Every structure is written in structure tokens, then in C-alpha cells.
Image (cartoon, rainbow, N blue to C red):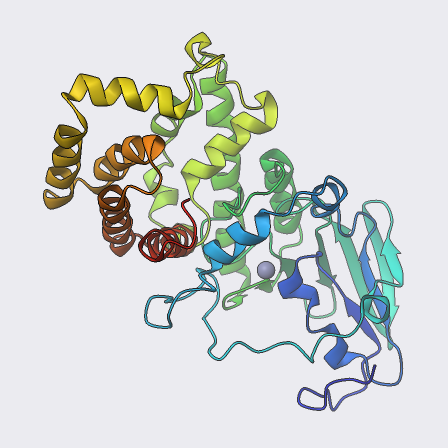
Length: 370
Ligand SMILES: [Zn+2]
């Protein structure tokens, strides 16, 4: 396949380096291939995040991924992606070559490798974090670090709500420590504006590392006291000196999801409370709660009252009881949709916002129940 003439590179391309295998970092490769067939470098674990899901026949992450990105939302509701602006109309399509043409041809093996591209020396450094196939590029002549998605100006996505296998938060912090050791003059993240100036880079990288390490260490401290994930998200609070930084605001990732991910990464699904070993089914529990509330009408009124009082999370949870009994209950669907829409209005986290608004549409339009 020839390259797409709409996105040609006018300069000879000698090598392409994938920092990791996510589509937003590999999808446009064909536009840069040209006739020289440049080397394509990647981590030896390239593709490791998606591989187990594909092998296991798991596909619903695609639905969740579209919700997280807000692909189905009208433009006025999809403000941004947290770390990138939204583009309408959506580009792509013919910029993609076949898999064979854009597959890596060269692999980083081990921790660190120096390569030379058109007379320029670059170091590729293994840096598992956002993915296990992450690497960063160090350009020593100009003291520039290309960090891939282990850094961008947002609280890091220690867990992606589209559904990803556990990301090692501990290794992510370690990889950020490796970035810090380079004392770079410029730090280029996978998204958002670069950080310029040695002291700024040092401050940002060290804060970022401290934040990730804090989430890990404080969660482990709580786990060792027997706390459950629901308790841990209250127990683990980022110190103000980190939580106040603009590059650690939860635009994309969220500290709470990182805490839950650390727990599940070490302990799996069981929270440690034996009540939860063999829970009542959602329907059985809901029937009992409805009875306790004095009937479905009373529960519905409580949900409507919660919605009117802007107690939207509670309204959504009450609506869930009614939907567990009848997923087509139109009043319960409306309440949940309205509650999610109200919640989304106050969310600065783009993935949560997109997800809530998309599910609200699904509930109103009857396309999917959940
Ligand atoms: Zn990315």
C-alpha cells in the first residue's frame, strides 16, 4: 500500500521509534514510511497489553474504550480526551497501512540500548509503566527525553476504565526515577506540551514519581492493615504539595482508580470481607432493599428526591436497584441517565465524564442497558 498523500513527510525518515503499542502512538505510521522503509524500533514486549485479551477472546473493552473516549457523543458534549483535544470530523482511515508494513523491525532487548540513526546517537531505555512495552528515548546531544505515555500533564492513568490488565504502579514509579536520573533540559511527554528547562523538568519528574510512589506505598500500607478497596480510596489521599500541582490534576487518570488497581494487582478481586465471598445476586439484593424501602414506588420517590437534591451519586445507586429488578424500567432509566449527566457536569476527569455521558445516552435511547 502506498502512503496516504494527505499526510506525507517531506523529509527523509530513517527510523521510527514506538514508545509503546497503543494505537494513538502507532496508528499514523504509514504516513511516514516513504520509499526508504525506515527501521521501526519497539520494546521487545511490544503489544503485550492487548495480547492476552485477544488470545482470550475478550472484546468488550472496545465498547468501554469508545465510552471512555466519548466517540459516540455529540461534539458539544465531548470537550476533550483529558490529555488531547477532540477532533471533528474524525480523521484516520486511509492513513493506516496494513499491519505487516508498520510492524516493528528492530527491538530493544534488555534495559538500555544505544542506537545510531542518520549519525544521531539515541538511547532507548526500557520503562514499564503505563504499559509493559513502554520505552523512553534519550537524546544526549540536546539532553532531551521523550517519555512516551509515562508522562503527560495530568494525573497518570494508573488504571484505564476501558478495562486493562493490571498496570504495575511500582514499576511506573521506578521508570519515572530513571527519567529523573538523566537531568534532562527538556521532557517531551506522549501528550500535552513539553516541559522545558532543567529545573522545571527535575521538579515535574520528581513530583510525578513521588505521586505514583505515594499511591503505591500508601495503598500497600492500608492493605497491610486489612483495608478493603472501598476503604482504601478514603485512606489514601495525595499530600497537598502534590495534589495542588497543575500537572497532577485528574484530567485523565484518577488517584482513586490507581488505589483500586494497586489492590487488585496484588490481591485480585476478593476485598477480604467474607460477606463478599458469595454475595446475593444484584436482583436478590434489590428485591430486599425495595421491600425495606416500603415498595418500589417509595424507592423511586427516594431516587427522584435524591436527584432533585443534587445527591446524584445516591440517585444513580438507587436507580440501579430498580434496574436490577427490571432493566427496562423507564423511570429508573431516566433517573439514572439524569444522575449521570449531573455527575458528569462536575467532573474534570475526561474519561469518567465521557463514560457517564455515553451511558446516559444509552439509557435514554435504549441502545444498551449498562
Ligand atoms: Zn497516548
